[in-house]
Each structure stands twice: as C-alpha cells, then as structure tokens.
Image (tube, rainbow over all chains, first blue to last red; front, side, top):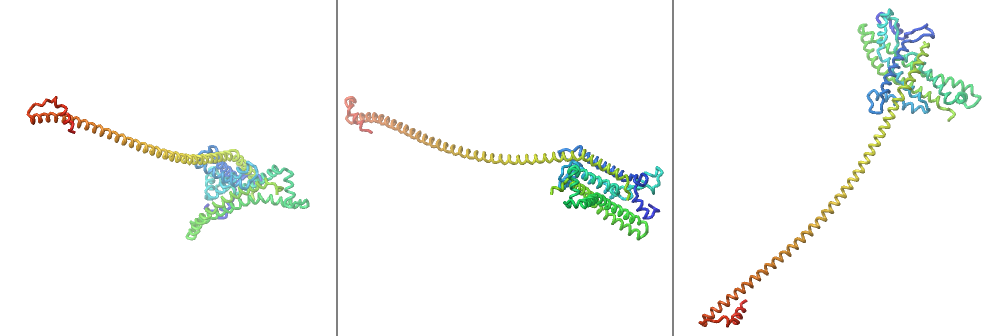
Length: 278
Length: 157
C-alpha cells in the first residue's frame, strides 16, 4: 500500500470484485465466492458428523454439531409453534453461514486482498486494481438475498397455512376490524411487512460494514509505525484498538448471526399463526 | 447501493444450502440425538430398576439371615437340652452302676466273711476238741461229742 493515500486505501477495501456491465447485470464475484466456499465448508463439515451420527458415544466434532443443532432446535421450538420441517434447518443454515461470513471480518483486512493480488499478478492484472471483499455479509446483495428469501417464505407459508381467503382477510381486517378501514389496514400491512426484510438485512449489513470499516481504519493507524515518534504512538494505539475491537466484534458477529436467525424464525412463526385465533 | 444480479445469485445459493441442510444434516443429527436420549432414558430406568432389585435383595437377605440366626439359636437350644439330658442319664446310669458294684462288693465281702467264719468255726471245733482232750487227758470221741462241739462252734459268730 506504499504510495497510496489513506483515501485510496479505504476505497480499495470497499470496492467489490465485479464482473459485468456495472449496472444491474453485475456480479460480485468475491461475495459469491466467499458465500459458496463458506457454505460448502459449513455443509461438508456438518455433513461429516451427520453421516456418521450414531446414538452411541459422540466424538468431539459430532458433539459440537449436536450442540449447535440442539441450540438452534431449542430456540426454534420456543418461538415457532407451527408444523414445518424447513424452519429449523433454515435457522441452523442462517446461524452458521452468517456467522462464518461475519467471521471473515476477524481475519486481518489486508491478508486476502494481498493474496488475491499475488495470484492475479501472473495473469497480467494490476495489483492495485485487484479487489476482494471477503466479508460476505458486508454486501447488501447478500443480506437482502437472505432477508427477501425469508420474506418470500413468509408470503408462501401465509398462503399455504391460511389460504388465499384467510390471508386476504388478515391483510384487510387487521389491525382495525371494520370494512371502512380496509385501505388503512392494507397500507399498514404493506409497511409492516416491507419493514421486516429491510430492517433484517440492513441491521446485519450495517453492523458488518461498520466493523469492517473500523478494521480498515485501525489498519491505517498501524501503518503509521514508520512515521517517526508520533507514528509509533499511533501504531501502539492501533494495536490496542485492534485488539479491543476484535474482541468486541467477535461478540457482535455472533449476536448478529443469532439475531438474523431468531428474527427469521419469528417472522415465519407469524406467517404460520392465524390472527383470527385471538 | 450496489444492488444487482448478485442478489439473485445469493438467494439461489441460500436456498440451496437450506435444502442441503434440511435434506442431509438436520434429520440425521436429530435422529441420533433422539435415539441417544431414548437410550439414556432406558439406561436410567434400568439403573433405577437395578437399584430397586438390589434393595429388595438386601431386604430378603436380611430376612434370610435373621431366620437363619433364629434357627441356629433354636438348634443350639435343642442341643443344649439334649446334652443336659444325656448328661443326666449318664449320671444316673453311673450312679446305678456304682450302687450295683458296691452291692456286689458288699455281697462278696459277706460271702468271704461267712466262709471265713465257717472255716474258723471248724478250726475252733478242732482246737476245742484238742484242748478238751488235753484237759481230760484222753481221747474224746469226736463222734460222741459231735453235738456238743457243734453247739460250741455254733456260738462263735
């Protein structure tokens, strides 16, 4: 990063590795790559335990997988009372997958971009223009993809459980049970339902974006080491901040993964529950 | 805001991983966990049953032990009585035996005594005859004085 300004450094870290025309038909290769690799890591590591799962004495890895499964299962059972075989595995997938993608934030910010640059150089790429963002949940496309998938499931199960009539009734006569309030109810419902996926995805994105940005800024502090006495002071400050933020962020990534999982389960639970019942 | 086709791609990936988890991970892990829970429940029940069995067996063993102790005491009692009776009988028998022996000895002594007396009587008769012969200086016809001599001898007890 020698020879570039702080502004350029930050900008470099906030640019996606893209393929496409720059408009809608653009693919964030880094997000897709990281999410697929980490998803496969999750799937195969859990699958290894699931394949050999026996009711005998569990091994260390099977034990861990069972702890995760029973943790998610108990959370889902507490919140979700409908009958749906998809919700608990979805919750597990969200929790582990999101956590793994969040965890990419814990890896030194320059490690993967540098490796990518080294790999790209033999192919004639300019290392200054090799972009790689490894925190998958740091991409709105990622978080919105998940939250809108959950949203689609909400609508799907609302139809499935309540039927078209029941669902329409619920939309038009809730919260004000009077035909004159039907437009108001509809408006409220649209706002309420749209707020769910948007808040879900923006919460995760915001937390991860802020986390990543702070790591980038701390990296800039560390880079001051070569700039005389004040530089060393800044560098030491950077080490302290880096440590503190890593510890704190470890908590945040877990909480955010948990919140995303729990809210998804809660939203699906609401989709399964009929308002006519009470 | 860079919303683009990545969103659709990620949604597909998301759905795929949910499906994979639902199909290949969740059922197997939960099945193994349920089975283990059942196994543990059975094991605990078996342990409880074993504990109860042991308790019952201990109670029964104590009962048997008590019965055996009672029986043993009874046997000892009977044996003591038996021994006392045998001892008593033996004592009685030995007493009778002694009595009998004493009687026999006494009879024998009596016999000896009377025999000695008879011998002595005969002797005395002879001595008396000899003495009388000396006194009267002549032969006494023992036959003639037999009655007299016998009377004399008769007086010796």
